[in-house]
Image 1: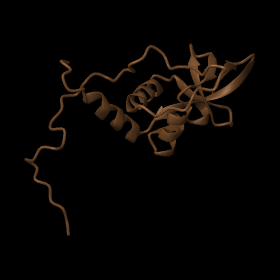
Image 2 (image 1 turned 120 degrees about the vertical axis):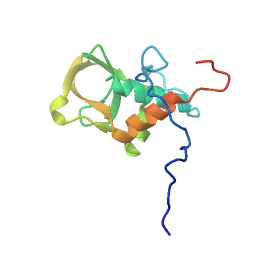
Image 3 (image 1 turned 180 degrees about the vertical axis):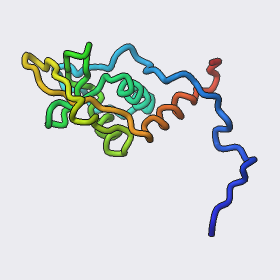
Length: 141
């Protein structure tokens, strides 16, 4: 059985005018404190912020350890609070590592270590654009 789509039928979101590039809802990505944070349930708005911050180049992977870091000012790296969310987005194909030629050297602790920035995949860009077009009920944007 083949599915036929009527070209006059609107999609789920209708026709959406292109919106400006999405920006994260928070000032900067949170860094992890020395204390282990209590486990809490995930917030879907955090995933949207993480995707927007990856697009701006704020997240990377520390050398070959798979540890997610927040890149500050292009030369400092700190452990990221949203490490679980970033790993989930990588596993589901929304994020990927940049090419090895884009490796940067950042200060992590007291040593300079290589950091490989993360980038959005096509699926990640599409998801970020969809989530950015949605607004809560009662919002007058």
